[in-house]
Length: 187
Image 1 (cartoon, rainbow, N blue to C red):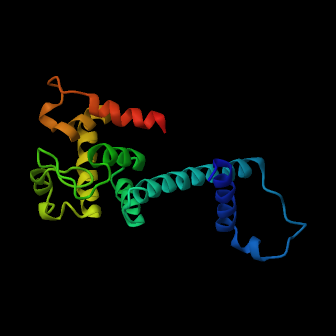
Image 2: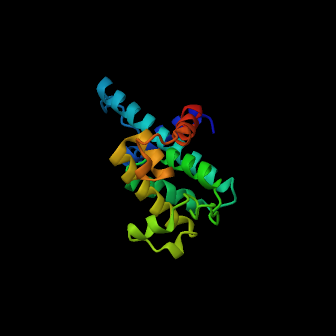
Image 3: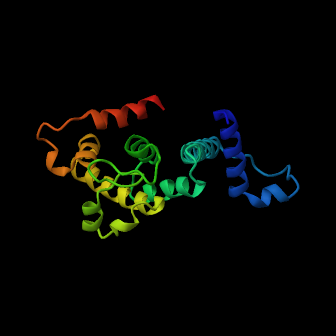
């Protein structure tokens, strides 16, 4: 969908949500028109809603285009929000880490969509045997990513996520964070 269509749908949804009685009642020609400030506020809310819809569609398309159910995309949206992460960032991490393969296992033993190490999962209280379950892996991966970003900042946090926190600041490579962040700039 084009951005204009998304914005139109968002405006309609917002209008119906804000004023369901107006949608069902006959027009009242004596009713006051909204003020400029109210109209600007509604326009801002509509723009925010349109952006959220666009992100949602992008995340769902990323998951389903790789043969995964829409539930996986919904998990990315819900879990990333719970941990304060950008869902598009989480999608880029998944793309780079596993190419959306929930059964992926790296040479170093990282497992699943977000390539979580068994030891890392266990240290956070997750069951390593469940890391091939897409939603469970997203939960573990987002929690770890959020912890690394909170501890080191975004760029170094991405390095810590990929290489481990001990390698941050000791000449660790930054190609990983550059690739994730470059994908952000391309979107």
